[in-house]
Length: 417
Image (cartoon, rainbow, N blue to C red; front, top):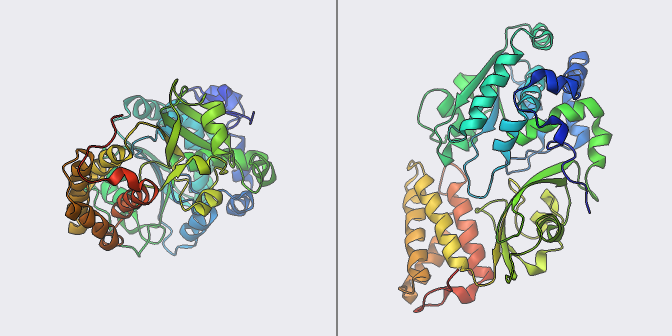
């Protein structure tokens, strides 16, 4: 069996807001290494191959280098813990049970780019996580290590815990900026990207919670060590939020590159009794569906992309035979329709219309024109919004149409779950 919970979820660091316990378990050593040579931080992340764990898998060092190179020296770091998408529950666990791991990663980021403020941007619906992070931040005040960071950056470092709007769209990086500035979380057009001009015009580095949690370990143990944690060509570990029709749903940390088959049938215990595997929504409900022929796929960014899907946040929502794919897709599109900020009419009206059409198909009330309209929306909507919400919604609808065409039959209801 592949190694489980060996880094971010290691039992020894599941301590909550206990700074002394974190230091006793080896916490702080990554920050010490960063303080010894701040110029080596970004090259270390590049050598480690760390990528963004919030969905896109963008190389972390490139984001950090862009913010560090910005001419404006008043810079900002944001830990994005807005997590609100169905099937994703990794970040709230890190924030609740390993807050100092996340804070240390954010402090190293501030050191790397010379930031004067750090925002820990947390969904207020995660009540325990928000409270624990507030306690954890207070414990860093007046510590020798925080003072050392401030001496290096040449300024007082603000550590702020900031409750988000609680809206799904609030996790989009430019919507994060809008929220931090006191406005509604409307996404903004890019460029400029936040690393160039973000919070109040300052160069702003925004990273997912899981991404920042990896940083102290890389600085402590080295890039080569981190790369060896993965399988094959993959590097490091990944948190997988496993849910749906499996015997043991839950949060699993596994080597990046672990086969999908192992996640579901070894760690997840396989399907519920009497159920057969049908499909999995990978990376949450805004990606393409994988089926039984894809169970051998290695769960890493590049391998999953080669199957025309995305690893995304690592959420894996497993569906069994007898469950209506149309119904599940309709539920997710309804979520996106309600989560749309309304700024872009094609997104707001498009997601609403897709949800309405999917409901008609699912209930057996659709006519051929409804199906034609659904296909047409999938053609005209991509790229019509300021953020990726509408593109993600179209992706899952298109994937279900292609992968399970028989379920889009007209004139009879979809199978009961």
